[in-house]
Amino acid sequence: TLNANTNDAIMPTFLVLGFWLVSSAPARGAAVALAGWTKFGALLVAPLWAAYPSPDLRRLLRFGVGFVAATLLAFTVLLLEPGLWEAAQTFWERTIGFQAGRDSPFSLWGWGQYHADGIPDLGFLQPVLAVLAVVLALLVAVLPRHKGRVELAALTAAVLIAFQLTLTPWFYLFLPWVFPFVVLWLLLPRESVDHGNGTRMASTEDAFPVSASHSMSAPSIRTPP
Image (cartoon, rainbow, N blue to C red; front, side):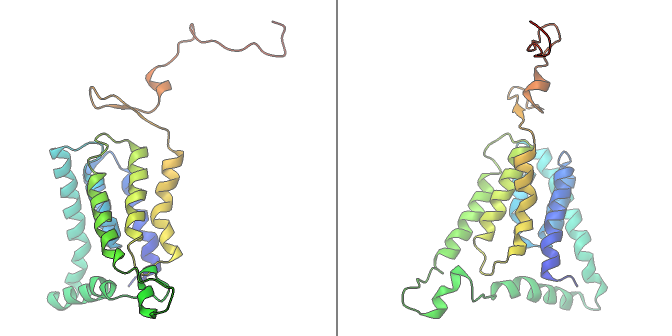
């Protein structure tokens, strides 16, 4: 089986692949499913990716088809075990069950275990932040209504960071979850939105090309004016 550190690299790989195929709703759904069943936190971006570039019922259905197909494919591994029920129990115990009871001596949310003067018990804030992370994941699916690749990258990073803030154990290997999308947000060209027909243009230069007859250039410093 793959260890947790390997999964921390595989999960964003699936999401980056889905981002590369962003124009296909089924491909986005499959990528989110594979990423989510590698690291559960990726499931939070499902509403955002399903509604890209704007909420549409047919697009949501195609996303759902890709998500369900990839999920079924991923869980066929359970059929390799002698007993399906025992395999499902093992999956639950080693994933959700393990994470639910996991603790960390360095966690901000576990300070209360020390019962030390001057160290506040902040554990009560952890479920509050978890709820807020879910609210954020749902909110960015509809706001802004029209999104481009830049917005998708930025909001994906924001949702994953919000989820990471709720985790009891945190490790620097979690950084690859968000790093690719921060880089994409910073480097991708901004897109202009045509709200009239829902189409997008890569840049204002592409949308409004300047003809040669109207272009102006500064005189060269090597030639006299």
